[in-house]
Length: 504
Image (cartoon, rainbow, N blue to C red; front, top):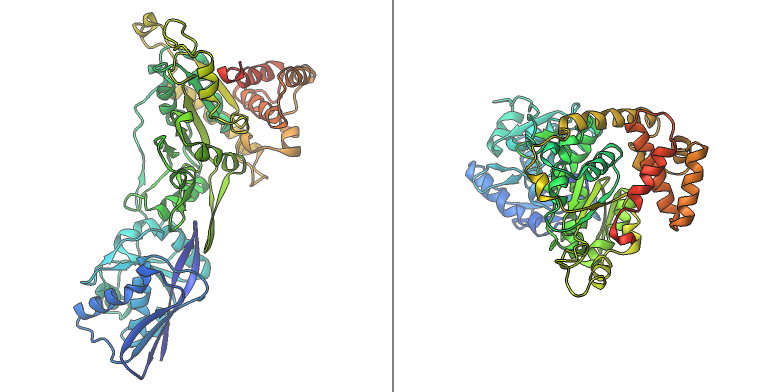
């Protein structure tokens, strides 16, 4: 006698359908699980046995075999407890077999039969809806899974609730989506005194999703500026929110099923490992670059990161996705993020201050910023020198523009880009434009083209640098409300390309 249920195995943010087959056969009593289970899946038999015993359901005195198909797909995680229990209950005819075959289940079982929340409910709900199945999950996961509009989500607190629901004794209501969470951002750009050029660069970067690096002395306001970036970013679109939430769901970072429209702002410490930044580990979990998808990755003390960590950023920054390769898995995560970095000009931090610089100037600056390779530095669209603020300026009242005012201009510029790229699903912002699309949208006027060509020859711009200047100029024109890219837009874009001490 064979009963079927379904579950999912995760490969990155993709949930692959798994058929859970339960066979009861004559022979010596036993319980075995086959189909490339990991240790957590293999231990499910003890949790399932204890949970059935707690419900006063006698475990069958037969040979119980659970097969997880396809057998060549690795199965990892404790979320296979619930589908194994459902398939077994179907084989025992406690739950009708036709019902067990029509649901995708995931959830961990405690020894007393309670359902423990697991990660990945959102992508599992999307797979279930695409295959025409309902989703059965723990009660806490139901709010998260219910965000998939065409999914039929049943959320239960215990295995007993599952039995009573599918046997028709006490039907459970369909799960409702969790609340849209919003963070209160009290950090305003008007609190930053001086640094008008740096604030302008921040606005341009936010408008076009351009990568940005601040280089300046300690205490000049680099981190303060970066921390106010979320306040000028527009909320994510519905598609972006779903993409980002799927990654956070796999990572277990969704708070009680709530989905947020705020763009992620990730700021890892400079001692973080490569697996923490790029992703990896035993289960190939997403790293900071993927958790910052559709948002900001702020890396303070940029040269202090390990050299191999910095070099692995080059491909994700360029392609917008990262492939994590392991012996038994190749997992792809999206990582379309804005990289914002901050660095001191040298080890002591006072390269440009003769009164406080160390004795190794200027060699210390070359050695310190030399930790950032040329190919990586070339990927920054905006390089900004952040000078120290005068003491007299600190006593002045805040007179700069508020984040709300700047955010309105950023939102208007991004609205123009959404219209511009409406027929190009692979492009969402000016930073994504390339090839013929870039030539079409960012072609400067004659004066602007002449200036760009002379600057490229004078400063030996790479082909990547040349195109990045064009993208930044297009964003500046969008902020200016101009349909054409003109000479002033090109000039400002070039000035941000050459502003840092790294180019001295």
